[in-house]
Image (tube, rainbow, N blue to C red; front, side, top):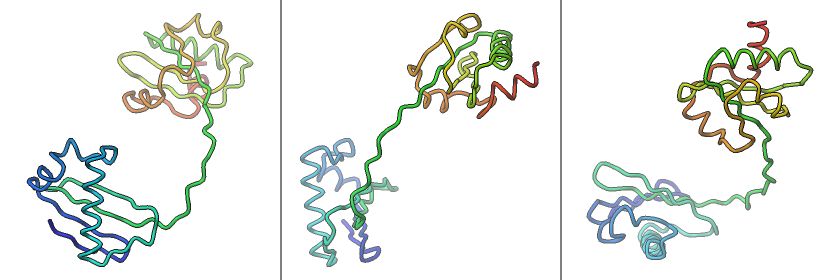
Length: 182
């Protein structure tokens, strides 16, 4: 075990693979929610305080664990900021319309573009050989059912589509593509 003071608010504890195995029982057990791991981290922190004159004048401590070539580093950083403000989580209302063919997708986009619906934001993604049109404005499902294979309201996770889908048109897909195909 090697303890280094990075600065007055941060220390680095370097451990070998063998030390991780003996202290925590392996990397899988190195979890702050695990009571045994929490106890061992407290022990390492107390050792660091004794050896490097690291004082805990802050109630909060950031613990980072980074794997290295033959072991890991545990970086302890004092946090002086006040408690974070709690913000009310706003739910985003959206519909995801899925299309098997580009023809159906274009027909739907043209119908939406020529309708009197005020669609301010929309994104188009290609995922698993299907076109997914995300509409952030209210669009009646009966309007979409004529063109698309599947409609989901707030059920398909946006994160999944954004991560695994290929973005084709972002921000204003209905208006931009509507102008092109009209």
